[in-house]
Length: 347
Image (cartoon, rainbow, N blue to C red; front, side):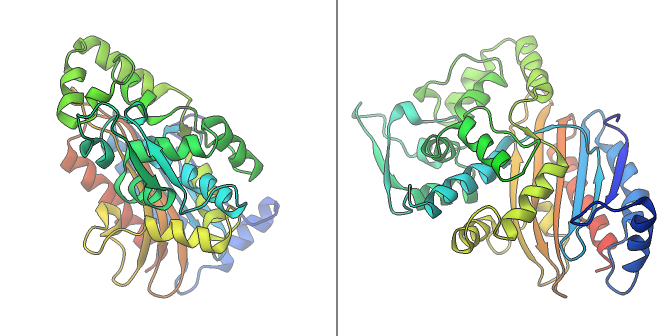
């Protein structure tokens, strides 16, 4: 299927015939229904606004497991969203008593990753053997709530590395969501830079090193990153991950509740999508916002769980790759996508 084609799937837990599918579609068209036709009509103009970038969106109604997708077949770079499967896999290790939330992990300069990282920004330049001891729980908070790349990479290593996380996802029945590299690898490779150095730990130092790479090499590296199948997810895979996370199918309830709590944004900071939900809605999400360079933003993503005031729950995501839009234009695109979803929810 072409990446530009939309695919609407009205799915139940078991396969159904086409006739049954149509009947199920009609069965929920009552008060508070989820109407996919609203998305069918309203999303194409939004996808058009995103060009030449690729834009995808997805919705899953938890009550009926009805799902709607656009650009369902394209794998999108995860960017910062990778922290969600990393955190879930690590918490599964906590459930298995192989890792403790109070366990302290020593972070050394060789463990630092590209910005954004509060750990990196607070690192002392001397003495040379400086190190930090950080608990697993604090690393989770830094990685999930603040997008700290160093914390995410340390947790990824503690979970067994990229291969172990991806294998765990497959064991849980989640396909087309993969973690292949550490943030310290992706951050430099996406800009055509040499391997990461601790001296590049601050935004200023990293940007200076980035600007030293020839423009043509940087542009080529960003385009290669957007097209790379590694460290990607389809919209459908994200819906599966969020559904299973919310239902306690990935980790035990205490640890899944911990992760969902960390995914809940601070009051007054819901992000462009979260601001569109009706008042008193609950919103837990993960975001990715790669730094722009040369007027090009490789990835911007938002994926999460919204609980409406009437109690209905949905998993949603919006994924943007290879954008030439400004920051304000991208924020408006995500906000308008969420507003369209609210109409589809009949909220």
